[in-house]
Image 1 (cartoon, rainbow, N blue to C red):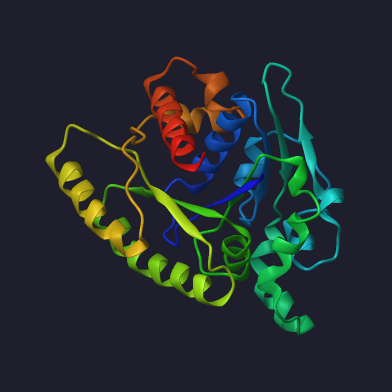
Image 2: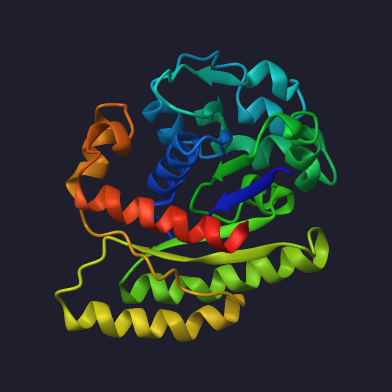
Length: 262
């Protein structure tokens, strides 16, 4: 049975793409069949996979229902990995998606991604949806199509403030189009255990998580340049720095996530 997970936070700079990438690669490394769907106009997840793809066969065309999802899927060749990873890449044109939908006078477009994924779900164990930092039609599509949400954030006051808006968005989606949507948890990244401020903010996150009817993951991702370096090299953290402390953090988080879902 396929599990679809949206990685989202309406605040920018919280590590959504980094989380989507290490989750996709980490699950593939554990033997699962993964589909990574990039819905962000910046297309950073698509770039970081180092895969070649047709720029006219992306999630932009998919959400406009101009193409079949099977024509957009790109397979990653990873011979040393037990599972598999496929990608539906993004396009900068996603920045104009809402305008294009209004211009075409399309209706009920929040279901477009869900409808497309139905055609390929049986091929995957997990579908990971990377989203932009906004309340856009792309994000509404992701939340409508998902079983779970992971909320990456940082231990700062601005991230805490943004969770209230996200809680309202998810509540609206549950009322309108996806009553079974659940928040798997809040993942704190760029974590520094040495500061009292970080510990205090983490306690506040634990209290705020109740608004999302969820929890803060016990395992947090420490601040580490290795994640950005891996993306810069267009590889994954497990290949780039398999023995790094941050890679151990990530593995422990994935194990915690799987323990809660399976």
